[in-house]
Length: 522
Image: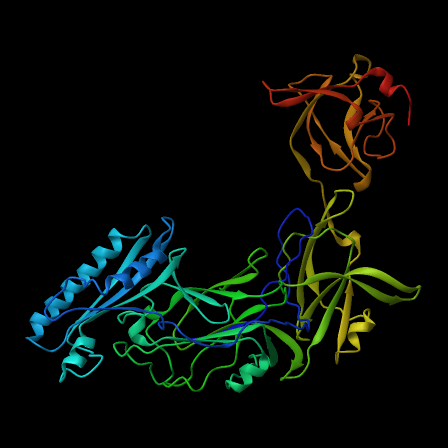
């Protein structure tokens, strides 16, 4: 199993009103991780308890080992997977020895449960006289074979945690190695944190579209289960062995350009692998407190799964860079497929700084561009359409590093205007009797929009509406005036200055306009 670390999501912390999906962007960033690199034997730590001939009670000389072991199981909230192998020497029959090994297994389990606070899930591996540690021809050799081997793994979130030397961790189902036990497959975990180490390990980091990957870390898990069927001539295995795994990778900071990639074997031995392709179904998170990436992905043994970012050194030729000039809006909290940044653009009037959306573009066909956000005045805007017009190179600084560069400018007038309303801010407004025949509406200056409101239960003086998020005025028109004219109203009053009182019974704000607030014409 090969797992490489690359960047997956583009994300930001800007406030907004909805989550968006965007087009991919690639940047060249240097990832520096100072962690130990090496290969870890997953099962190198084990406790071995030896027994007397034809006995399954724990010798007093061996009990100290178990007391030291139970010291690891002192927390009630912890759960551990115990993998216990029980053996005998070859004296007596095979059936008798199997039963003796089974009793030794039960004795060890009973001791651990009695003297531990933690919870256990147990894998029983009774082997009898099989797999001797030494020769059964001598008493010294037989003494080494009368043993129980205990391996333990912590369970986090229902998964068995396998840890490497460099701090990486893989979480797998306890059945991941089935029908073999974990430790009888002799699993080895190798961690790689740089492209140089990947090259020495013979890893090709080129994607299907010719991009050279920059690795932020790679994890390789090798194991061998003789009881599993071998892959076919194309390197494919039975899908039932493909399971969800979680991978935790230490990183000093979040790199938003990382993506999950996968590679599949192309021969039975797994020596020839396909080029890396994006893993669309994988999930990636970053914990700022623990400084770990967390990846969840379905993995088939023999395949590769990595977390890398794409560099500008593309094996298949450079693509053009899509650059879109977009209005100055506050973007959503999570940006996934393009990134908004500030950029200086050379225009006829000289250099100007605009908000830019940048993404990689193959130079073929149209690009569907969807964007939404909120202005500083709390007016929402939405755009969705195809971009197919090549324009001048509007971002000269970026275009000097590319063979091609194109730009598309979207004016704010092409966006759909959206008015958002405040939650649980429902009004019942009463106007003075003198103005009962006036038309009453809401005016939002920032959006240059007039919103109609309805009369309450046929009343001539009461109106029901929900308060808009932007600054809003209540405006009154004479009955014979043209209410569609935004500037044609006769009176106005700031909604925030109207006296109001919340009614728990009706769950609305009761508000009343005083005559003195409307004495001046606009």
